[in-house]
Length: 355
Image (cartoon, rainbow, N blue to C red; front, side, top):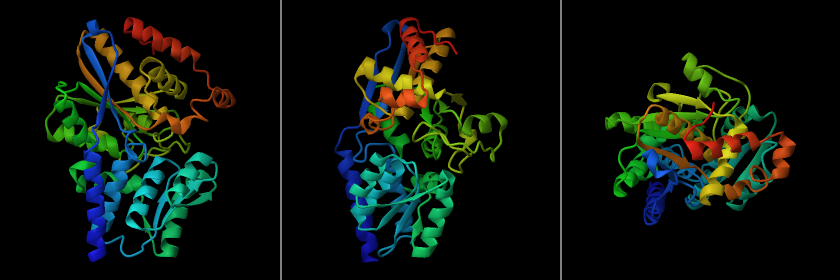
């Protein structure tokens, strides 16, 4: 019991430390005569460099309270992304062993970050085998399979205000005197962020629409359109952090007003366009968010509407120096950003974004 309380206190202290750092809300430079403002909440400032930080804290808090983590319980997670980095950070903070089960082709940089935080990496093939392997390892080692895809939304709902990105977002908007947004635009990996923000909007009766942007190969757009909770593509996303080959349990379609499919090359073009026009350096999922936000703004312009659109800067673009920001890597993967960059420049000049 004493160790349990110590660990919960450590999580509270870490959250309090984050509160002392101002949450960054960046305005995007749209033409003033449009009467539309665009803001990006910057989650890259978290210690682990992404919005997965809050969810990881909530998952550990929830598992400890539920008695699923006790003593030296090994924590196992199945992911090759930022969720594993954030969980490795909190496992080290709490003195727990951590194993990330990752696809064999995961980037060496991501593996290095996890190991630098004291975590172990278990590589498997094919990529979708990571879930069964994580379950097997947890059972074999007497560990806890964190399963952020299935448990993230519930953990955030049961957590504290510091774990709830929706509360942080709307509080920051209010503190800066920003009117209630017409749209909030987010991507969906586990679906936790979209569900958390959707619940907040409904609970507070806000006149705000929730738009989810979805990359190629992901199940969320077709599953939402067809109202098929079991929809699956069987193909992995190329935009790290968002897009899933199946509809995840953390995604709540009835809370979403529109799902916008975004080509992967458009996501990467928008990511670079953000850096060129503002100096802000986000990852591919930030580009997906921005491209979707631009599409909604173009629609607002066509309809003669004004207002505020808000999205997220999901993670630190420096994590992708050798991939998304590398022209050599893009060429090797067959990405041509030029047509999409041309569309983005046209949008900023005219307010029109051809589909």
